[in-house]
Length: 365
Picture 1 (cartoon, one colour):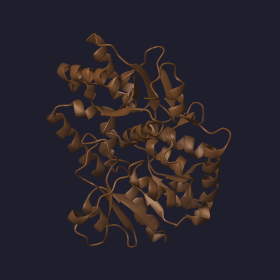
Picture 2 (cartoon, helix red, strand yellow):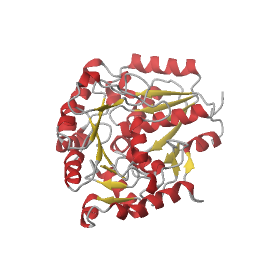
Picture 3 (cartoon, rainbow, N blue to C red):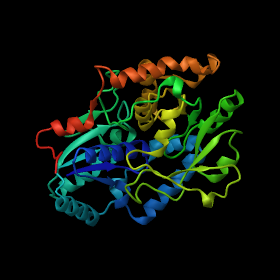
Picture 4 (cartoon, helix red, strand yellow):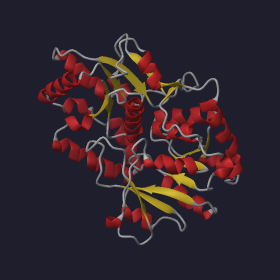
């Protein structure tokens, strides 16, 4: 049994964790997803939910909050830690895969309590250590570390397949752009969507509040992420539903994928994704072979992601595409480079293979 340790404050690490669980399940491996917020008291969860709303509305606050965020592991009491360890023992967890550095504090506290830890694998979704890992400090010697992207190496060492379907070829795509702001809907994507619509592009736009759909540019398809859903509620993918102009938000039919997240299906058909460069977005770009039009990052780790994607020929900064007249054909070579990256001889190692190759790993029932 493998426990996949994520955090609900960043869907860019939570969704890749869900994807790993899905891919392990397809290989006959047992996996359980643990979200650190499930260990927190209710008052702390209410603070997180309030922060999500604030950060969605104010990108500057989001960037500042990222630097100042407290380590949630400190708010977990000993009783919750003991209960967690007891559950892992009952399930037969032999390895944990850490997607959020906040979990390293939890593991350290388990060790201090004298509780035996499973083997640890750290999976970095971003191309450099994200803020949660930077706060955690150095990892213990002998810890397995896998990276889905590497700024230092300028490559993609490992990956988690989002789908087994081949990417949609360029000439078969519907010509739409997909604009989103990651799991919490942060950044300048709504303004850029309006600008691109004015230039004649048609868009799919992921919104997080119903009123945002009403103000979307004409011809835009608005997809509402269920505002009542939080990752610590269940282990499913984020619910997404099409909100038609003038439709009562209460009648939206939310859907969620069973093998991957629903927004990826929009990415597969798009000419480009217009988004800040979060690690989960890079993964979507790779497996859909959809170029990224890169917006302002939320932190230094996302700036490194943007540089890597540009250096690899997979993306272009918004300003650069604007100078090219927002020509879709300017993006075609990025699509072709992404196709070659997944199908070529230098394709990244599947993380599932890395886990199964690890001596003593539990990749089968």
